[in-house]
Image (cartoon, rainbow over all chains, first blue to last red; front, side):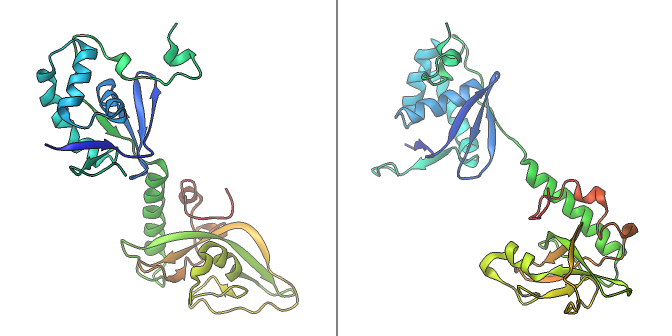
Length: 95
Length: 171
């Protein structure tokens, strides 16, 4: 099972009704909706798998965790590309 | 009271802005870097202008870049002015890297073949005009945009300088 971590030094700030996230890896700023920013927020709090993240967000939204899994799963490639998230090797500590 | 916004110590929370019963598709849109865009735009402009109007100038490759430096002029008595680039200023741009094109303390004429110029009588005076140094993909300075174009105000049209974000000495 893939595990993820928020890239250290990533800054996420609210800008009106969206979120601006700066990646120190790419040097770029990305605009996020609430859902994506929430995923980063939960990642930063320690959850590191799709299942764990869905469980937390499902509780926030009042939805079934399984119904979120597919949606959350599809966002990883974009977040990895944007330099906001990195894949965490199993059994290794955060760097 | 919404402590996301009003409390100086509270961190804004995206989770608290989620709407119950809804979880939309996550979206992440990368903003275009303004300076990168301006750099690309200005470099296309300069490359087009210099290459198109200065057949003496080296061919501009896609990996080449430009760095702007100020123009200096030297007046030798009542003779014509000589337009120059200061090696000291170039060294400030390049830092410790240095280059074989122009050394610190050296002056180069802004005209091919970019001869070294030794000021006599008076020191060159810095102007508010610019020229562009052409730097190839290896970081080697290969030429100076010659100062023969665009009404004598600059080697590069003013419209090109507007978004030029390379290292320069004037805002």
